[in-house]
Length: 262
Image 1 (cartoon, helix red, strand yellow):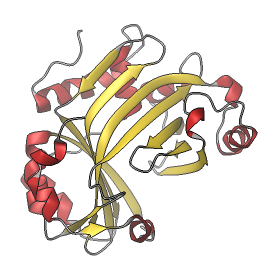
Image 2 (cartoon, rainbow, N blue to C red; image 1 turned 90 degrees about the vertical axis):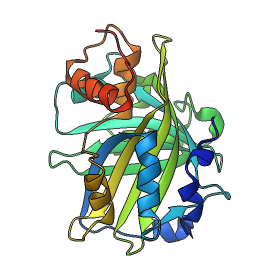
Image 3 (spheres, rainbow, N blue to C red; image 1 turned 135 degrees about the horizontal axis):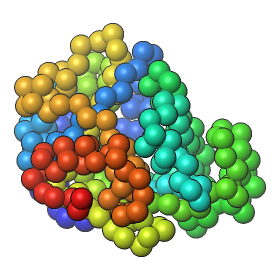
Image 4 (tube, helix red, strand yellow; image 1 turned 120 degrees about the vertical axis):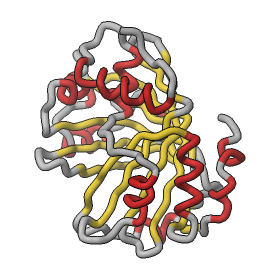
């Protein structure tokens, strides 16, 4: 990993918030919106956010490293559900939070109203690539998802670093993902978006958002992106990807780098 913190001096001036306090914040009417920008614009975002936000600090670090492996069926039914425009869909992943070393099996489900719910359970780190022999994890998957462990296998790795901000009013959380790297577990191909930043704003829909005003001022527009789907599209030349090509072109324009041959 690069010295990302050195590139964002404003990050050090943002007051900290601990994980326990952040987890206590309940957004009762939550609205999630994703944005894509560049690392250069992120520097300005952090400068403008100073004084209005607090930054999550875990294990003494303001930047958190994430190692994630998405699982899918042999025919990538979860990826194709997104590609084919299904409003109700799921993703299954195992994620290690590198600062703390904890690993979770996580299930994300999006309904036809665009609302996302996440369920997770902690599993041993050694089960990162294969949790199928863990009876408790297999039962959790069967209960919380549409799939059995025997149906799933490793699909795509995503690795990135994250900054998490919480506004002073505690009505919104903001995740900022950067240094994005992908590795396809099935094709063996890799890709990266080192200059791209994916921002997800999770806010109480009834409340004013200072971050929305900051992003609007900097002309950072909403763009719905899935790290699993973009990473898969970039690392599998044969897979159907028409739905994601326009998004990839927009990201290329934002960061000024070609990501995929057409």
